[in-house]
Length: 486
Picture 1 (cartoon, rainbow, N blue to C red):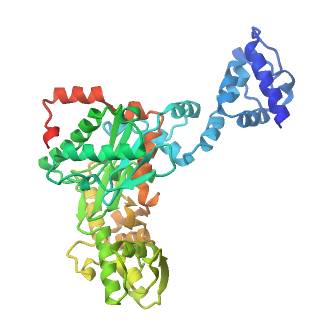
Picture 2 (cartoon, one colour):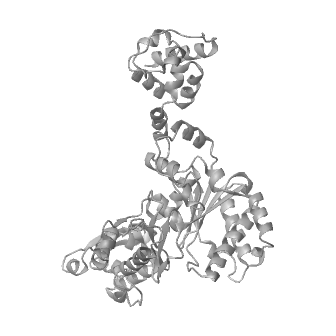
Picture 3 (tube, rainbow, N blue to C red):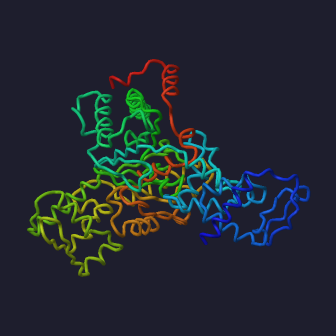
């Protein structure tokens, strides 16, 4: 095979350097595409390789790799047709670091940019040129991704397979009485220092937290203030381009969806966020349940103390929760079963739980068990779905029937199945039909991977990023900014 490849590439290079005849008269190869009659003489001869079937030549190009395949287009029309085949470049994209299905989703649904113009979103098109996509993605600059989260922050390079570091959220930086500008700058400077990179060298994607979710003038102003402050801080640090996207939207993208409902179980609260074509529908309503991961861990702590199980810290309890706890499909039936299991925590030995394993997560559906006055998760999601159905804004009753789970505690086994079961029982048939609950596609890092998907799309810098000049012009048009004192 190596000898054959050297012969093929030697032929390619020699033909590229030699002057091409006006019209080559080689016979058509077996399996070759039928050329247009007027272009029949433009294919050129491959010499001794004319006898090879077209699929063998295509396989040779695959083995040569994308760089040599691209160079072969300069030889003659035959090589140009072979090297321009969509299947060839789809093959090269499949060999890349990103999963193929995510590449296709990003290039067909996200290439137009954020949902400022919903009509720009389009479905998978047969006209998509994978060669063009490959060449554009190859030159997209690496970006820094910062996912503030609600429990801790995840950050890293967009070209890496996973976040490279974790730290406290920006809310824990600086004095709470300090201006937002100062705290954000301290927070972002710390991340740049830990990553050992200058802010002026790379674009950045910042995952916007779920806050000020009401559709009121005050909430809209607060969201705008936070975003403007963020842009101001980063551009004052000479960042070349900034992309800021809502956390729930990115979690939805990670599940290969642009519309649906995201259930984000955060550190202190759970948010149910309706999203249509990449835009959070604040006018429909974001539901908030006042319990999150911290309450689950605290409730497990209480249950362990009731059984006189000793532990050193809340971190130990959280580790046990992640290793042993799950969501029961039927809580009452589960109580009649023996579900005892054990796990080891480094430095503290073995711990054994029984009904605590499923009782911990049951407070998501029955908060009164843990002494919490809050709405059950299934009731909050059904309320959001009912609002979506009654809005009748889009004439599409299916966009909200996909529910995507996000957040660390949403990774508990059995949660997606239980939530789907409860929704089908609670909602009328015309709303519940077709409901699907999807577990976190990338575990605790779904929003980070959604940002990674955007950062590698072929149109990232043009369609998704805001440049310093654009931001300054917008600020100038809208009057003086007050972000430095907010």
